[in-house]
Length: 207
Ligand SMILES: [Zn+2]
Image 1 (cartoon, helix red, strand yellow):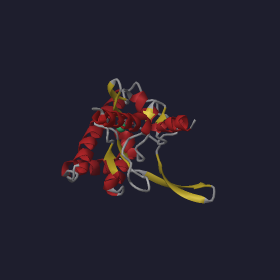
Image 2 (cartoon, rainbow, N blue to C red):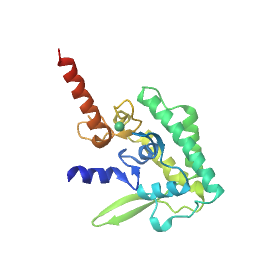
Image 3 (cartoon, rainbow, N blue to C red):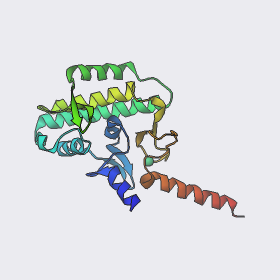
Image 4 (tube, helix red, strand yellow):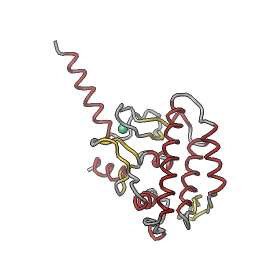
């Protein structure tokens, strides 16, 4: 029962949410699964569904860009930005700095697509959240750029890493107390790696 509940939380509407951070969840919309590499943001409708699943877009505010050429162009630009982000995160995980070129592109996005914030009352506490009311397809850049800025400037970089499974391309922010998280998910990779290691140990013990 517990495993089932966990699996539901990791996958929402066919998208993986194990990154603990929006920009990482965005990065993880291109995966390598059992059947090989998979692009989850296959079209503008999928991007809309991802934004809803990620909690960025309210379902009632779905803008209906799916058949527009501008929507398709925005998606193409966004996917290109996602792959640049991937290269930068891999560089940084390898001990290098984020490139000036990428920082320049990110700052241009932040300037041309500013985010509006609002304070909401949820019971006794107040919380700060982003207001996302997209009018044109490129508005999607606003929450993505803000999340990438947060990832690079606020999230501790030693907590951002790739899943240890060699065949997996999922990155996550380790929010565990000990900071010892190794896999994107026990369901996806952890159990597979453990079983493989167990088999390997048993093989090396045999005469
Ligand atoms: Zn993995």
